[in-house]
Length: 225
Ligand code: IYR
Image (cartoon, rainbow, N blue to C red; front, side, top):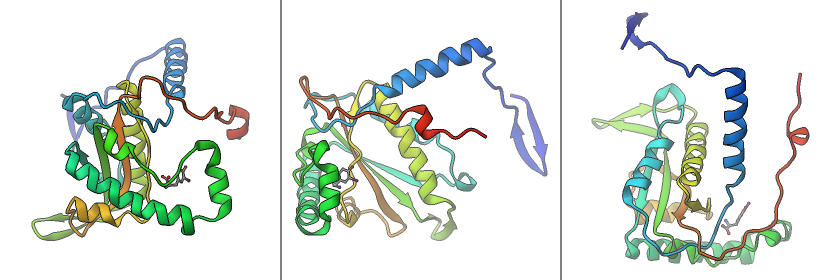
């Protein structure tokens, strides 16, 4: 690999994909079609998924850019039924309060078309739960390491994660119970990590339905200058 020192630091030559405009158009259209098929699914088949697939999906998430390349994330991968049960019970306890007292009526009516409620059976039914933690700062040899743009970095990594899950033929739900501190306790995470997103992953149940929602058109989301 061709290398070069820039201001004293090693750099490696970047080999970009060499695509013709036609290939680019074809590939961007194809990828859009693949991603447009993705749907949030809340009903899982209990069929096991090979661990290797989950490991590769998490590796894909870890290719996301991050502030100063600090990679401020930890992905907890859970298949242990006892831990899943604990997470479900704790999440439902919070969600029961959220749906009955914390969420204003407008929020609940906005969610009506999606058919959500405080019950979260998917937290036990999905073969895997991924709990993404953001590291507000790092710890190396007992020393604090400064992290930057933590929310942006972890958010982008979660996007990659969700795309990789879909690309592997699996489904997921991006679940954000509030508050999420119970995840730190159950998974015994260190003080520098805070729960960011809880993502059950698995095969979709054989016969399942998702809300008939539609995505905004290009005209609605793009402003060209
Ligand atoms: N966290 C709750 C509520 C919820 C909120 C939004 I915004 C959603 O898009 C979906 C659900 C729950 O998971 O049910």
